[in-house]
Image 1 (cartoon, rainbow, N blue to C red):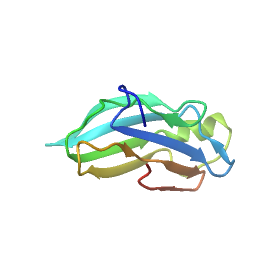
Image 2 (cartoon, one colour; image 1 turned 90 degrees about the vertical axis):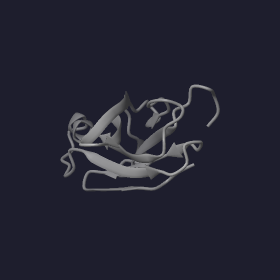
Image 3 (cartoon, rainbow, N blue to C red; image 1 turned 135 degrees about the vertical axis):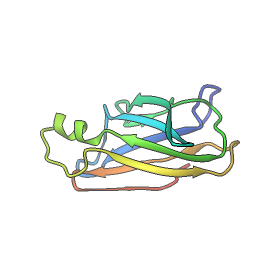
Image 4 (tube, rainbow, N blue to C red; image 1 turned 180 degrees about the horizontal axis):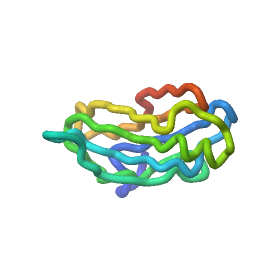
Length: 116
């Protein structure tokens, strides 16, 4: 991703049951710390299902977590779903790299991967 204001971590949510981006999902980025988690940033997916600004442009190596408020999203669509939240925990091994963590979502399943 280009630009000086790009976050070290970005995400993209695709509603695979509809074949459309999942707009309006609140996403929280946290870092593991002694005794729990520290919130670093929060944003909402745009009309393209993307969050490009979710915290600083550089993060220290360590363990991080993204929390997606998926229950609210499906409730707005009047769709029954199984997961009220999706949490993805991952490790940043290189503080100089950009990390893109997409989420493929449906009411009763989800998957993720390290994107580019």
